Length: 146
Image 1 (tube, rainbow, N blue to C red):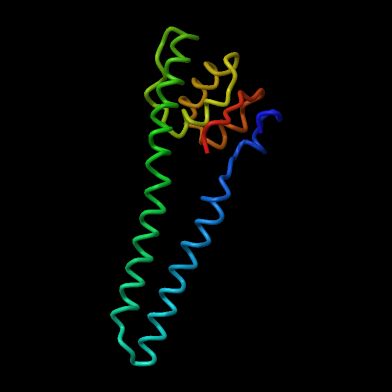
Image 2: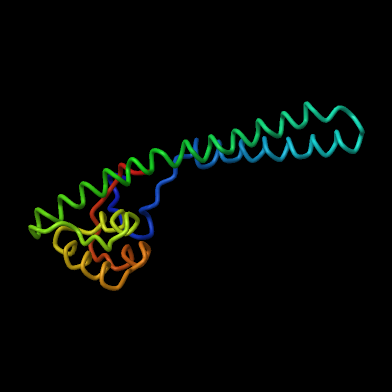
């Protein structure tokens, strides 16, 4: 995407190994565990191995969600700090405390020219992150966050 300019329609990034392959494998593991537990219960077989299989699949789901959420939180903190510094450099004031982290993450796509005014509007009107992105006239590319 570094060759192509970024905009509202193409700014989302997907990591195929995580978003596709690992999601499908995790879902398949969970479905298999539920099917195996149902088969064991119906056949009157020992249920313990099937329950363990289900517990392991639930553990993978939890790990899958945590593995995604922790780096995003770290990225959000970095973006908040970067955008607060950028706002300070441009306006000599810190970002409005009414802005949520999600709003600030959306504001990072605004160019320096429209960033301060869009920050004010986002805080005053409590714009959603999606509305903020749609309001941006000229996008500043961010190819680092997935």
